[in-house]
Amino acid sequence: MATYLIRHTPRLSGEVEVSTAKNAVLPILAAGLLTEDPLIIKEVPRITDVETLVSILRDCGAEVNRSGADLSICALQPQSPRNEERMRKLRASILILGPILARTGSACVGLPGGCAIGQRPIDLHLKGLQTLGAQVHPLGGMRQLSGRLTGARIYLDLPSVGATENLMMAASLARGSTTLENAAKEPEIVDLANCLNQMGARITGAGTGTVNIVGVERLHGAIYRPIPDRVEAGTLLCAAAITEGSVLVRGACAEHLRSLLFKLAETGVGIRETPAGIRLSGTAVSPFELRTLAYPGFPTDMQAPMTVVALRCHGASLLNETVFENRFMHVSELCRLGARIRVENNVALVEGGHPLRGGVVRSTDLRAGAAMMLAGMIASGETVLQDPAGHIERGYQDLPQKLRTLGAEIEQIEDCAGS
Ligand code: EPZ
Image (cartoon, rainbow, N blue to C red; front, side, top):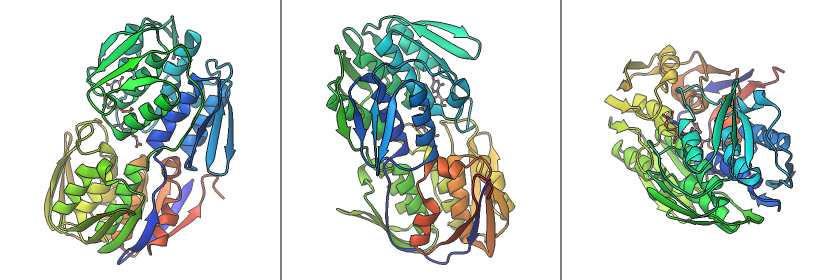
């Protein structure tokens, strides 16, 4: 079990570099299955979600090699994964479905897992692939799909990030043109489209609600560097905002973080966009209201860190979670440290401005884990953060180390192997 000891941190200061985005890298890794040529991905973060997806890609017959920070994938003859159990380890495992089906005409995959933040069905992925001509058969806990794909008009009932990614990849090798309506607009969608276009795909409109994809006969290799991680950058900015910090997050892209930056500015901190990154100075004091939404709305992945920011503000803040139905698991952990938070349905009412005291808490999911690490920094004395599932290492490269660079006192006292 990974366990962290966090001591009270009066003030963060300095500079820290953001890693490339987990949620951009994972779909781009899956895109490596679309071509027999090598796809080289630059600056891939060393996180366990990447390791898990790499092991799934290898199970699909791809050769994946790391050279320093870069990964190369070469999928000469992709096939369906044999290990169903591994698929359960992360949600992004479902992103191999579109590429394998489009490339080979059939695919059989287990249902994905990932953070238990909601039901997270894959109906939109399957419905979209069906519209492209795939036949879908349930096979125990697996889904078997087959058929030669043909371009079509697809309307997504929800702007699902994963479904948009899966369908963009599948449609890239389909016969004819596909239009995805009500598509997700997240920066990671644009990044995947840019990478696919570098591989020879013909995608336009990514980042808007309507994405057009003209299918091509084959895709080729490319060298691609994914975007910086907006959630990691945002989390580091929140860490500064709760500790009267003065922190420059190098490499952070303000364009991807607009809704968060406005919300942080509302709390009273100073934000400066510079060519090097984003600088935050000051302390969050004014309470706020936020509602998580699909991009460009406020990101659900930043809701847990913003709950900690709300604890710092003087007065009542309201956080309304509309994307996932079970994403307030960090609240009961925060209450163990003395936080005053009430959750009703999908709204958390946070009474900020009361001191937190150190204690023993758990990381309940990836973003909640990072939020608990921030909470430990503003609690008095020492906080022990237990992360039995290794959530933090799943999604953040060296988060404790990065916070230490800024002056936090965080030690990992036990690793995932329990040493
Ligand atoms: C992606 O998940 C991210 N994961 C999530 O980040 C992020 O929270 C989420 O998008 C929303 O921004 C990756 O990119 C790997 P969705 P995804 O499909 O694709 C419902 C993190 O911590 N839905 O946009 O799974 C679903 O239940 C993670 O890094 C269906 O109903 O999200 C949810 O309520 C957590 N049917 C909503 O749509 C479907 O077929 C949005 O999900 C698909 C989704």
